[in-house]
Length: 497
Ligand SMILES: [Zn+2]
Image (cartoon, rainbow, N blue to C red):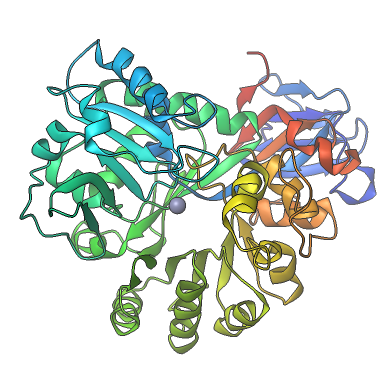
């Protein structure tokens, strides 16, 4: 057998028997051994990576993120509270950006909560940036954005424009759009075309992928609700050009199943030597438009349609009412394959968790929000609910399968910060939010490594990290980084290179 790569002198706390060497061929782990007993397998073309006794982990999996949005955010103006504490600062930062180039001016990350601007932006704010160029600023949640008057015109939104299903065009007392749009990203893309500076998107995508690799992430699931054939091709191109050297699973937008079928793509379809896969059908279920959207009957219709097309579903459900509706619906409609997923499961007290357990779905939780947004929750969420936000520990204790995702670009995709918060339920700088944490870092790692294992026969998706997470206090976990990241048997990232 021709061995491609040997990882030597690793500390493998997840391997039994004190193994310290991993041999890889054809993208898979072919042997694990102790000391130098695998070295005779090395041939003249075998790469040997000396890991200096550092810890090796199964590659980390980000089960829910938005790769193109994260790449685009890197091109935009940082409007998060730390960079722009008030509306005047937002306008000033955007104006600087608007002085160069043409087309859309993009900002991201503004926050209407008390720890941010304490209000939403509006088109008058953004008209001070430019009356000529269209301006779009993304809310930190990714579920709202604000356009200036030129932006509204470019998107064809006027006084009489009806809101699309599930979307909201916020209007003032006189009926004029204020510029604030809720749940309308997909509609905007279809209506106004790409509103990002598309030219440097490939470079930004590569930069963002490298950021994920630097944490030891080897696989990411893109949860775009509007993902269809064009997005599939974009991912394929990015992987083929080496811009995205990690495994990507693309969830399929529920409205895109027909076009995917027409293109010969079905659930589980693979491309790019297995680096790209088609995942669950993504359904947005929101309570931000006043009531539930879609209505539970319509939701059941969507899940059944997905089932007929062969897809289990991934339902976005943040609010308590949405999680209840998702769980009740999924309990009635078994998946055609695998398991249904409920994305976020954010507001999930014990009675709701019980319904999730009965639904048989897995929960894709985002404990990173507790780390990065804990102080916002403390300022905006009723205290009785705090212990039940993103309750990975409580969900797991009920036997619900849990996977972790960052939801980047909403927050930084640091899986170590997420695992720390899942253990301690502590925010970056504050006291614990209460609730049941996970019992151990090993339990957290199982939720962040998907099906990856360090054992013969498994794909060689691995991360060599420092410091050793299993010997690191929870408070210091967020600073764990990869020293080297291996995807499909190739070293695709090394620290400092
Ligand atoms: Zn998301």
